[in-house]
Image (cartoon, rainbow, N blue to C red; front, side):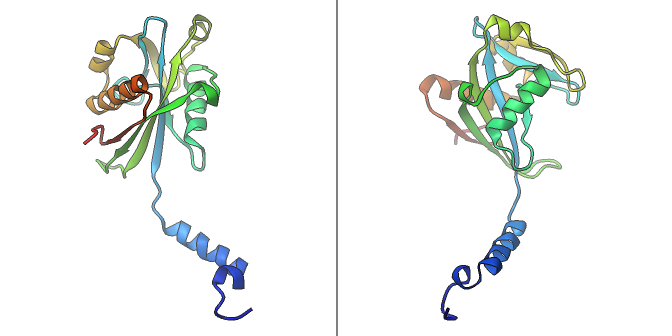
Length: 175
């Protein structure tokens, strides 16, 4: 092969090393994946974690190299003993969160899981290593219990679900 050939043709092994080096220098982002889950009355499921002061949506941080949809499914199983499949969840919101406090930027996703049936609700069991309790709350009550930026994200996600779209936010805001 001629030396005019690109590296990927000339030396595939060297090309892979070049890509790995570039990958190692690229930014890494934290990714969180939460779920909107409702009961038959339209109330929203919130959880009360014992490791932070405020209520939250069920879900959590996605592990390294884990697809966000799989991450939220795993978190729901771990936190609440709730088993859902990928076909039961649809992306409703992506929120880019700028660096704040000790945290770098992150992507926070909300998936819509729709309405849980009475059997699913009866089997919910909080992991007491992470959660104090859970509750289905009317949107106004949920707003009072959630941190303001979480409420903004949830509110945008709920509107996106109603309009069959996906909301894209920057720090909880559309603009």
